Image (spheres, rainbow, N blue to C red):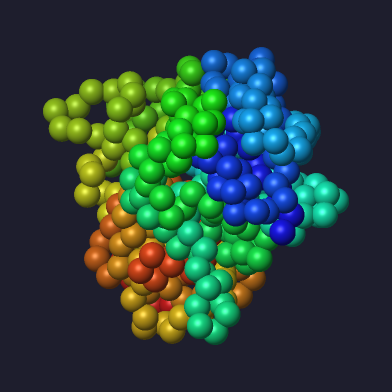
Length: 360
């Protein structure tokens, strides 16, 4: 089988390429150049060193290698929506957009042109086929590294994906890299968003688009506690860096991008029962309205028991069994049955109580 491996120059994707080569596949390495080092601002993606690391691995494995310049598409499909979301008071997840539109979109077109039938990445997730021939996307074996959350939009295109390291722990992957003699076996990994500068999200938004609307910071009663320089400095649930003081901890509970108002309150003010989703992607598994599944609203969170009602035009209603911390609009809510990813969507709004209108 001819397989294109998205090679980032890191240990995970490099080991994925080595495993596939060892299995006898016809492997081609491709590194995606998504932005320039100038935009990168001290991150470790798309620099000359990273490209050289990927090339060194390809030469070591004796596989064909190329760099695909996708800066224009990445800017249009990932960076600009990221900036617009923060200006609008939402909190996006650009890695999910990159996986869908760049890795399994743009790179897929290049893979087809090269005669490949699969794309492989270094994500920690697993694919399993059941007795009926249905392929399921599951959590990676290493719970601390599991990245299935970022891949929920691929449940509709699993026939083009491979995740060779998903059945291993990170320790085992490094051991495999050493066994293969890969020059990146001990390389330190980055866990940051690749195009966000070392000075943070807000500075990146300001550098690219000038920031968001300034306004007041209000307590639950509407009292002005202070002022801020732009809504792009805040995300729902944020506790630190608010620029105001109080005898008890305060959390961002609402952001109004039109007026510039940022409201703060108690942690319990963030608890909700119902979450509305848009732009829902779903796999082959159907679920009933009373079936309890797990819904994960943040990458570094757990899936919480809930019922999901799929609607029309890519909409869905999630009703949690117990009150749960509210996710910021723009974040992904991913639905699991055990460790299997069923689908998910983008959070648009949340409700404290279950109301008849929500279920109408």
